[in-house]
Length: 221
Image (cartoon, rainbow, N blue to C red; front, side, top):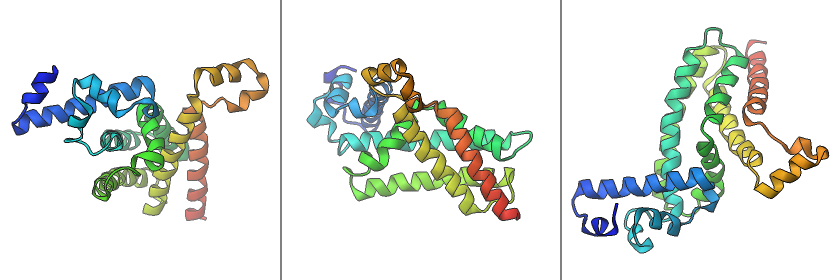
């Protein structure tokens, strides 16, 4: 959208479209470059706005990406719950695999999950953090019942722990699995560094399945 159109926007609908354009630009840049590499100036240039004008809609760069993280939760939670409920033979392994596949298929969400506690929650108002945490609570309210329906021996606490484990590891593993080009070449060129190569989905599946099996054994033992 041209800069002059942004300057003329006055109605609530125009402001909503402006905000959506900012989020869309941040989403595209984050997917292409990685969240850490995208500045507020980059986003402003992508939407044809001056950086100072963008601050009327978002407090900081971190608020923009925290909003995108919230959108990621709103997309991921019902999708995962649907896949868990659709499992023909739900057990620790198949539930873990559903978690891992749903997260590995959302690389930008994994990137955002890693950045959230490190950066995104640290340069926004407490009210924005509250809004975000309420979104994650809503996500738990969708996922945990689906997990407990698949694995009835588990408690709500077990379901929450499964989500916390899956999201934190997915964020960490994504960062390890996507090093800079020079480091990636180093890993490929030196067989002694094979352990540094991470394949997010299978590794997350193994760890989460082991955790779920242990919890099931505790609850039924």
